[in-house]
Image (cartoon, rainbow, N blue to C red; front, side):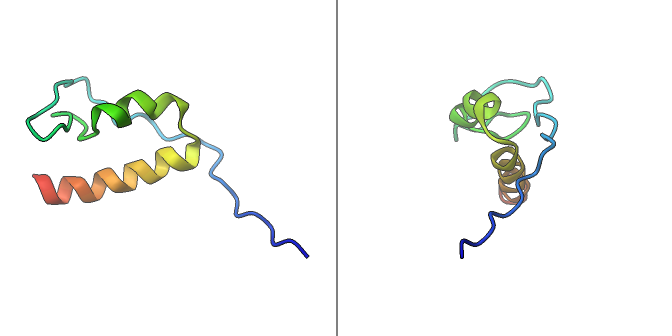
Length: 65
């Protein structure tokens, strides 16, 4: 018997972009704390990946601010 796949979130989260777009010396956006790679991939990420990145950004915010 095959285990069912966990449900992926259907709704995509809003973009974390706040229109303050400039990478700092660490490579993080000054506004949203995403890396350039994360910003570039956002549109092609699944909803689950986007929600996961938002969780990463919450932790990153705690460590960098």
